[in-house]
Amino acid sequence: MMDSPSDSEGGGGREAADPDSPRRSAPHGADRPHPDTDPGRGRRIAIDVGSVRIGVASSDPDGVLATPVETVPRAKPNKRSVGPAADIARIAEIVREYEAVEVIVGLPRTLRGEKGSAATIASAFADELRMVVSPVPIRLSDERLTTVSAARALRDSGVRARGQRQVIDQAAAVSILQGWLDERSAVLRSVEAVRPASSEGEA
Image (cartoon, rainbow, N blue to C red):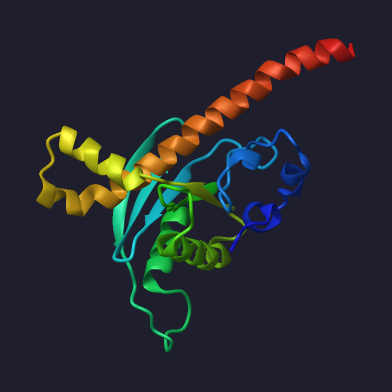
């Protein structure tokens, strides 16, 4: 589990001490964009971890728009295998290919905001991935209803139910990432808006 900011954000201890930190309002165990832990410009990768498939999405270098990448099959547990599982290895390869500065893992929640088995699976996957892609930071982002909204978007765009199975995971990853990018942009804008006023006050 990654309830501690230092576990999930590598040096994000300042965030826990900041009473105005966005993470204070995040669901238990989830991360929120914050200027103290933001790696700056660069591509972000988001993944929607399922029991059968993993949806992958990426952003542009400016962190404005999320787009689908691919769907990675979940690897079956094999205690005899050496090194990372095939799904972990593929995600790590994508992180390297895109030169990602940050990886966002969707953290499923129940409608009541509680952590269920799906969230446990996502957290465990994030822990394994962290060991392979370090020092690239891993963030956990609340993804309540993300798959539902992704399915609705596909349906509204005319994609048949049978075809949704092939792309729903990618669409969910896009939804996770776009939400993160939008919140990050808002947080950074608010910081920039405050800085000039602070500078004038100090002068």
